[in-house]
Image (cartoon, rainbow, N blue to C red; front, side):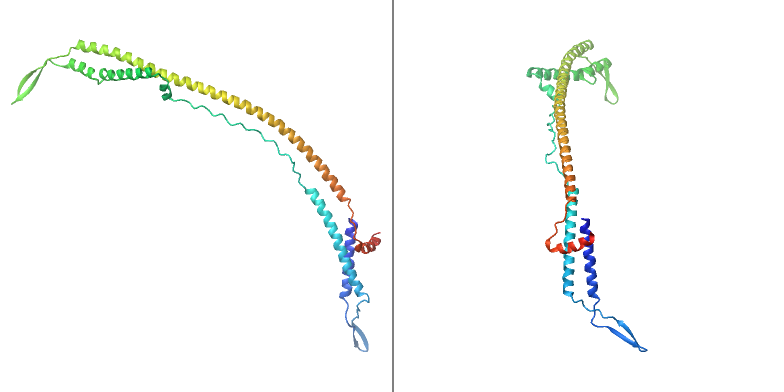
Length: 292
């Protein structure tokens, strides 16, 4: 290849020299006589007798140079292609399987707890809740029984009313409730209210416990589902890691073999010689002798 480059340069130099020789030709010489002395102002440069042959030679030289340059470019292109070739492993990397995440159970609310009561239980709750509510309204502060008891204690035996002209007339007050009886009624109703209120609280506590127990069960079940999911996904990930390492080792080995093939191909290409077309052989031989 170095010889090809050298011969290409020689072809160019030879062709340029011939072209320069032909470019300097003219049709006449010129002289001037000064004080009986002739001075040449333009020398005669006559076209060589073999001008047609020289022109053919210029064509041969440039054609040979073009042939050699194309051969050099072709080899350099092949070397560049070999050096920059990208290798793509034909087997895709294994992809891990992704399990669908478990669908968690949602927690229940208090309404769910009430729905767990039997019809009989819920009916009893409505009954005792109504009893406790209305008895409580009657006996508690600002209730009618409390009002009567308080009013009875403060009530006088007589009141005075102005009827006409500032004259006061006595109003006889006759009590039809007895304090002791009202107290006894309050005590009796308070006992009933406690009894009904306790039953109401029993059902409310039962509902809360049902909800708490169910939500605890749901949380345990969700935790079990996630534990099973993580266990299975972990096993899948471990298997994928093993498969990926095997794939990576095979890929690296394949790439190493390809690089070895590349280096051998570069070496073989570097040793290639130009096969000279017969029409350029005479020019090559002429310069090869000069090279030798």
